[in-house]
Image 1 (cartoon, each protein chain N blue to C red):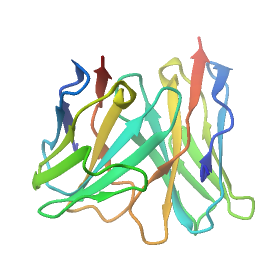
Image 2 (cartoon, chains in turn yellow, green; image 1 turned 45 degrees about the vertical axis):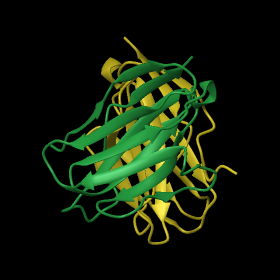
Image 3 (cartoon, each protein chain N blue to C red; image 1 turned 180 degrees about the vertical axis):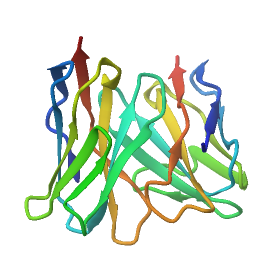
Length: 112
Length: 118
């Protein structure tokens, strides 16, 4: 039973346009959500996070939106750059646990 | 910034042998280290959580006698895959949580180790 779902395995966008990556979760106990970026043969690197007390968090070109009622979050990248091409993982934690539960990832390709 | 290294970055071994993977936090002390496994096109699956000086806590379905974890110091954790079989072939990634970390995002990942069992 997958508690964190990223239903789009891949996404392709043009440079300069917006990239929207989606993530759904099922566990109501999750109260902290993170996005990680991962290049092949490397470990994930932290991008941005959001607590369940917020519905939006912005950091430069990256914005994460959280819709608790829908158990859905999204990562917006504006403007997208070729260097953003990577696999993006959504992760969640909660219930006092420091463990992270990851989605399967979405491979983003930004075309020049 | 906080850097986590893993050694080796890749290893090929024969079935039935044991392989040790090291995870080191290079510029910080880690109270907790986590070991993940990732199969192709799959998510990172947490295998175990290890705290310095105590026994590791394994996730359901992970054999503790097969995947031996030792967290000998605040900067080093090792994962030993004992009697490896081809189905153990995977990408193993560790992460470390700094002593000064107070939020969940403060978990820094190593570059991973690609294990191939022939």
